[in-house]
Image (tube, each protein chain N blue to C red):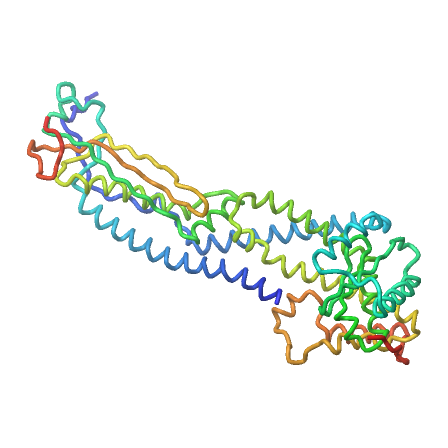
Length: 284
Length: 166
């Protein structure tokens, strides 16, 4: 066996750093597509799961759970929207209608509903936790018949009856908690982009809620007046024909499109055998 | 109105991402070209490691007449696109390739600056690289510091050199 001779010097080879070793071979845009696709998928799964769990649990919340909250919530609502009207013809008439409609509610609705007429020009109404229904003076002043107001009030009764307020609260809390864990200390924009696919999903939930409340309201007004006249007038007047929304904004809209909503209500009125009739005048 | 707000909220980060990607890619491409050019020019300045820098015990070291402390440092920041990609990677785990190019550029730049700081040196002995992250609100930058001993075969010092002759 022959030993190699010890070299006096080690040869230095001139070589530039090898770029293929340390640098990624995959294009960053491919990386972006995979990762954002994964994130979108993850958020949708989390949202749907949260929705299913919350919807299942909300069923077990008794309608009386709202009762203790009415005072706190209405104080809070008055702080945000302004003072409520406590007297006067507009208030008294609305309160009377509100109380009359309450007699048509299903027997299992044990809420002590509370009406808040907010002194504001806004044309809107909403249902809040605690069984509180908020109507703005602007809406009451723009109504052409009592039937229109009755439909709006019954619609809000419908939201409360179907516990949409608890569902929204639950979904928001549940989803927020999960996303806080997933995103942790991430960039605000990052979570914004992660939430993007959800905006559409959330709006779809909202639209389903609206049409559920519409159906409820139609049943109530049909039983009270014996017909559905005036029910859709309010939407018909407020649907702006020049404001035809594009595909994206139609998808994003919280409430179903007015024209779709009217068509849907008319179809349902026929199904309920609840045709036309004389509308009741409204004090304004 | 609400839907416009939602769209605007989405649009801003998308614009930042596109800008970050386009500008970041252009700057990175240019930097890599510059790195390759300068690395070729400095190929004759090898970076080596010795156990001993004493000519009495290390015969290799007897060639050198003079040594000098050499250093080069660089601070690079990530662009919005890279940061976003790394953030997404943080959720799923795996190779953070968007930062790999950044770190590679930073290290090579620091070594080049070290070599460029000692023109005429015949080699660099016992070079070390340190990395520090500079972070704060909205800041994602890294500092790479390379330092070592420049070796000269000639005992002559340049006019600007403050190196000590041995």
